[in-house]
Image (cartoon, rainbow, N blue to C red; front, top):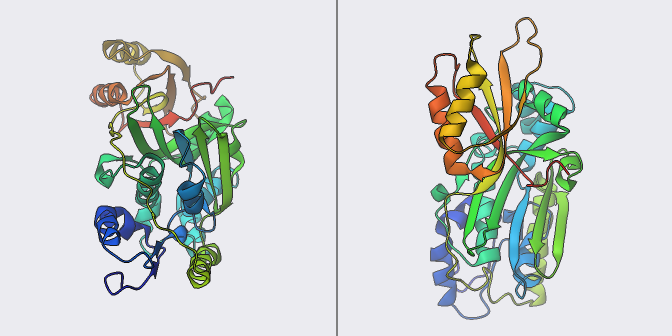
Length: 338
């Protein structure tokens, strides 16, 4: 359609994320009247694409973080607030039209990763291969994780996060994250999406609205079609490119959940593994183990490199008392205790 001089309106975020450089190159060869609009591809009814195209071009974005998949946020709300099982929450989300045809795209975090890649292109002018962005979904979360999150004074959200470090490089990930109850994102429930953008000039900007379902998505598509009919021009749909580098590592406080077979010396061994890799333990959490309940305790670290956490997890998993793969998730804010 574009090569034939036809403007395109699409909600296909997977296609855009996969072929973004090719689309951008093609658009540069076309007449100025041919446009590519994709507001509905990211966060359904929230006008985040238009805002990123126009409101931050003279600003310096330090951090983007947000709930950018309505299906998983609906499910996590049902699992946390309504105490539903994972299967019950997914079934309800599918019945309401919040899940993709293949729910793996939602629950595996891949849908959110496609959206995050598009947002990173708009915010930082960089093209990153999707596979380079660390991506973990919600399938490993258990009831115990929500209990420990509540003990810490917060909840769990699947977030897409991109952040610029002191050197000017950008890291990014999609993962379940611990979020305190005082955080604006903690109260965003159901299929609602929310994105926070921290920048030098505007400081904190939060966009919130319906991010899943046919009507919010259709609303954004219709708005793009009407804009074309009105003759509105959008000459740079992806903003200018830049030399910003992507680094596949980041610093964060981390929550680790370790399932165990009871034996003497477990906490000592965990401490030794953490010390070996330069990871400082902030606190250890353990509920009394009820009958028929999985035995698990949780560790909250001080701020540390993601790479160091992966080394700790690999060593802990090899210990005789460790049952299954340890679970981990970032804590969203460095000042989570304040």
